[in-house]
Image 1 (cartoon, helix red, strand yellow):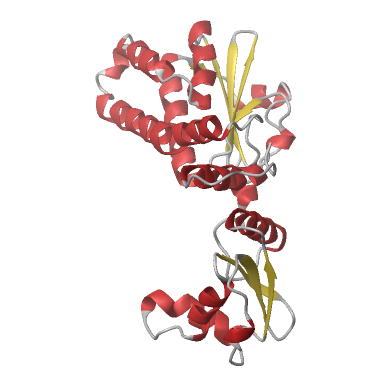
Image 2: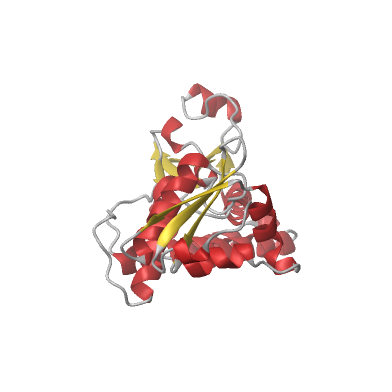
Length: 279
């Protein structure tokens, strides 16, 4: 990209967009001070920390920018543009539709669990999330499934499909069912997934102690319990606190809205006023 005339750039918050020679949007960024931020691209050093900026600036042939009233509005606009266009060099926030959600269905004293990135295909479930880390959420979900296989009786896949809950195989989607799970515990599970109460996992630990096979599988059980605690600590509880501190009224938080929720929380933590761009 040709050298920028930095004096033409305003010293205000805004969003900037780089395009390549095919007029394809390749990167969206936000700045507290547009002139200062874009000067960093033009003057990027030959070191690892600046490698991405150098590559973007080298590939770009055109720059557009838009000023914003404040940094919060710039953050919101940046997020919306990344979600809408998924530019080549943007990774964070571009694949919000892959944020997983976990659903619970209790029917005829049977418990069904669903992990999916397409919750709209499973209207029978009460969903929780959306969670950002697929790895952490998937590990926590399967840890829960493995422990439930010890304390309950698994429902066969064919029966789940026959009941209309399973459907055809989908990428990033898993559905499991269990019988003979205590009713009180099943309701506490929903409180756990919302981040309201950890007692479901404490009660599950007690149920495991009553199973004869638990002793021989103690190492496996402890590892699964650790995965559940990590999921609670790094995904479930932070989402609950973000909703609580931001007065976020909509639950579950949709995949598309999750990043906006944490933008709102960040702004509140910085002591800045928040306009009515949120639920």
